[in-house]
Image: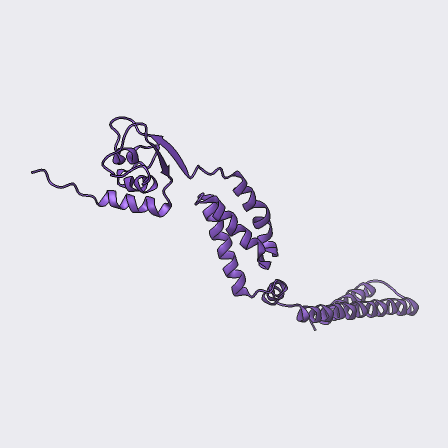
Length: 227
């Protein structure tokens, strides 16, 4: 082995240097024998150290062979929460999607709170990767989320019409959404072309889908040519 070869080379070199030194000095036989004994003892000491180091190396190799791979360790961790890698991958995706919705304040807020509660009930939520986000970060984001009222009230004034009310910036900013107001106030509006001052209308919020729908209608609208 490389270590033993190194020791042998070291001992040989030491022996040669010693001979070179002794050749330059007059030594008695007893001195020569004493130096040889010293070198022999040094050799035996180095061999013992080499043997001990080799034993350590073999033990480390044995321990390394018994260590699980990273993938096996993660599989064992997932089993503790009754999940597979595919389950955890899907759970990670669900957590990421919910975080995105909360950051964008995609309401209603109550729905996002229900989504979070459902994820918290999943045992995978106890994994270190998810715990802080599910039980600290996302609840704080929800607590800081001040949701706009689901509807506001508007009192009709002279000259108003549903298109104009819907077009107001504080409402929808889009006249094509007038039927949202009409449908929310059918108990007061018999004819959408006839509304009266002092009527009090509910102006409900538009959903994201409704906003997109009315924006598309507005973009695609082409006025009839003037005759």
